[in-house]
Length: 551
Image (cartoon, rainbow, N blue to C red):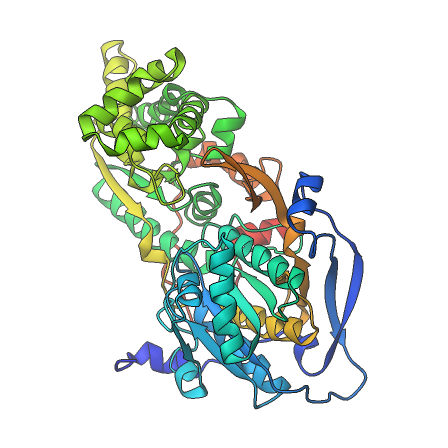
């Protein structure tokens, strides 16, 4: 690693806190057999060797610990970066060394592709110590290769056998941990002798349930975004002449937008799940914002802040139906082949000719650029690349048009000028907050204990996260327990069900109770930057979402 900043030097000395149960030898206690959240028979048939495993909780062992035989373990960082990944690896390394100093850890480079392509590095104490309590995934890099084929499984197994690796830890989000479940079941069915353990990562916060209370990185990322939103609010309240439309990460769920709203109290925040639940059209979403802008403008308050989840456009019912139809149309092999021979104009004409009347009516309402992105731009998994759609600009333009209509009717007598922002990558690689530093280290250390317990197909779980870290509960949850079937690329696939914002949950209700006041008044909060040193009430607080959920 290059020369360290003063902050890096000070953070290197920080010792993450562990749950008391992991301070020494542990034993595993098992609950009842589990089942998937939905589609039980389909998931069971796809995971015959690992379906129905019981939940696992660690308790202190009364018996003195005997050092197990030395083993080699592999680790993969998969998917988008999230603050704290290095601490998961540090905790895993320290946990393995605590069990047996001769244990070895290998990192596969640039994600699951490193396993398939046999690219790896041994992670020694010298390497690990350079990355403790740092952000990013640069210790071994990350990637988005999906592990789906037997050829990939067998290629990965070759290098695992060659290195003598008997356990693999996959650090990732819902798709990455689906990979982990597929690998675990394949290795077990084929008696490969390889355990697979997952760790819950995603700043989006949509990998969660009763046992996985939050995914790591969410706390840090939302604090980074909230700092900048607070700065914009301060500037907004100083200049008093701009409406700031701020798009935030969160393709499938609005957890980031909701958390940032709770931290900063903007004038308006859209929650995609509410839009879908109320079957709101795009025009209704625009009208909601325009009403707030007009009410403030008529009182001389020609400024404000609007928070927008990245994935909003997929939750608007009419556009969701359009996207579903487009996905089915563009997944047909014959259509794929035809599209490859066409230029962009021909592709657009081909798609428009094959849409239903309802879908065509929806797409004709949208600006041409947005329509083209919906029709033609796809990620490697066949999904609409919603992060590329400038929803913040689309909404502000539609709001401006609506305000002109209101002004013509003498309903609005203010001034409107918009500025646009998208906060995404800025939060993915920040130095982890104390909460994420502790939580991630515990997840990794706990993963070592799961390996030592001999289980496979489990995700590392650390719970009771609003209590002092010494009181956290450690254990594991079967990955298949979180799975259901979803339509992907015109095929039914097993995936971990995404956790969306619960409109009956305490965090959303707290937001809903206050938002009218925030819209009417200028009630901004300025959280400031993450604090790493100082009193616990400043430095060690969990997210507002967790606080509301558990208090």
